[in-house]
Length: 117
Image 1 (cartoon, rainbow, N blue to C red):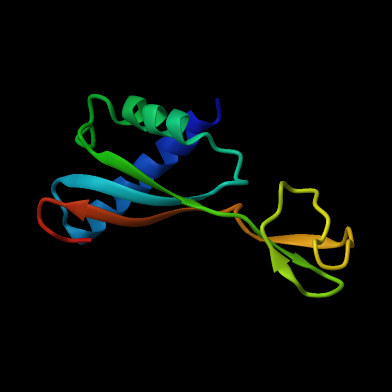
Image 2: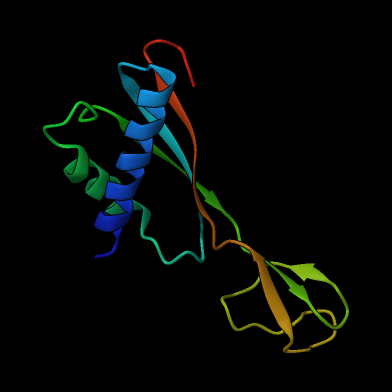
């Protein structure tokens, strides 16, 4: 379950940013996760709860925004929603396609009681 390691890193990033910005209480962490990132959102949420238990981030809510996948055909340059990593272009039936969105994972923002982000 690699979600626990990811959740621990999200908690570390949250703590680093909060400390740097002088935030005393983080209420929410907003993350973007691509649907092809190989992360199970429910497992990440429960892992974040485990990672922050008995810490000053314990009551922090993890908000996950799923980023849909987009692929681009390297032959005809058509962009489309792929079925997975290995896909065929619906425009020209080429196999030379590249995933351009949907694999990302990023902490986008923090919300606090102080109304700071």
